[in-house]
Picture (cartoon, rainbow, N blue to C red):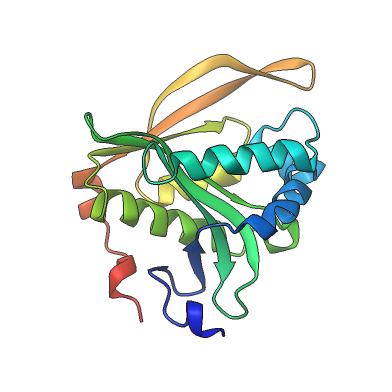
Length: 194
């Protein structure tokens, strides 16, 4: 492990979160052009490096203001395997939207997304002083719904036929977690990990 990430700030047992670097735009573009990955993230069309560069620039402008965006990396070898973050951060009302995706399909169903979600949630409540974290998840994404319920998120409503994808309409769930519900969770907090 490199000295830089010897003890990462936002860490779990097997993954840690860190900002993306400019030289990783190509990796992000690869993920955003993978049909299997984008199926879970709601992607609609391929993106080239230029679009990813523009997105990265905008991300840098908004980082720490209206969003916090991170790469999910394995602690064992520091390899980036996905993205996580809080966006639409509203400090006045104390809320933000959670987004998490493991972008390496070979690593799905191994708990990395759950762990990254916990880290992002701890960051939102423990550092940003949020009162509510919410998310949108396709009703057909049973794996995602299961993960979020396991973390204490509750179904707050369903946008009936709220998303148009692959020629048809799909329901989208809104799930939320409040500060006191997070405090009732028993997992080891990010800052308590070694």
